[in-house]
Length: 412
Ligand SMILES: Cc1ncc(COP(=O)(O)O)c(C=O)c1O
Image (cartoon, rainbow, N blue to C red; front, side):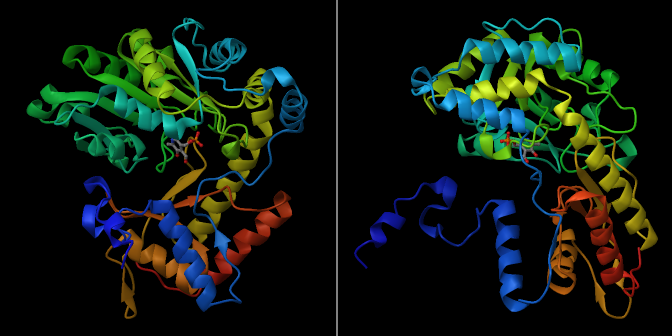
């Protein structure tokens, strides 16, 4: 075929000549596709989607109003390059107010980003040369690691286990790896485990980074989504953090603004300087009215309060529903995820060797969408961002889950 040669030109990082066999399909896209296929097979099945972590609510009315107002101004029409100063000033104030981070300079220690995801891709471009090692916790959000590999780097994985409160054991990393590592990616509150970090842990991270010359990237995507008396914790609030790393924030989760694509990166001056150069060569900045709307959101952190109350309530409901079905689960301290160990089997019927098998069973047999994680133990992740209007509908969904699973005799 005339166009076949094009396929042969695809880069090796995407599979080269073998490209097209879905091996590098993004994990969540794959789940979405599996769900669509299951829907075609069972058109009458009503799916309960606890898969992709995307808030079910709209952005606050005030945020929408600012966007609409600012979008009408001629002065806001163009490229924003590395962003408007007002957004950075507000982000610095937000860090102070919400996280008690006092010492970020709004000129050269912060930059807006088009959400967290591209920032995580760019941070790999800041650090990784071929052969360099980056450390990342698993299970986890793979964007920086994927990019590091694409750039010829290597990823050393640090497993997160319940016994260590889903924090990595930095003392267990082989010395040879520590010596060669350049970058450590952390994410707390953690996706998918829901664990939060502690000041002691972050202090240890700073010591580790200084001792071993390793830069830290902390992904605070779920920063404010914490429950039951837990307070939001920033890596930058720990003394010395700014000497060794940066933190990435996004308005996606805290302000129901996933599609808006706005966030920021803050911390070490040199990293921010390098990041700006990379960013300038990747994008031309977020639309200014979106930055102004984001500014409004950060000036109203109370917007998040209702969202936190909603997720907390839903997590309580889900925990008690799953407990009633025999699962051993605990409410997480943060994020909107419940990380659930899979059952071993349905005796005499089937065995679940992996979380992928269990997740597929839940989708195809029970119409319940979860995300499987097999990287450090076998777990599925339920996200409480499922679509429901109010407590009554949420209860209905919980009853539905209970009814669909109550007659299945899982062994754990
Ligand atoms: C840990 C983590 N970081 C970053 C992101 C991406 O956030 P954004 O919407 O700002 O790109 C996600 C989204 O699911 C996430 O789970």
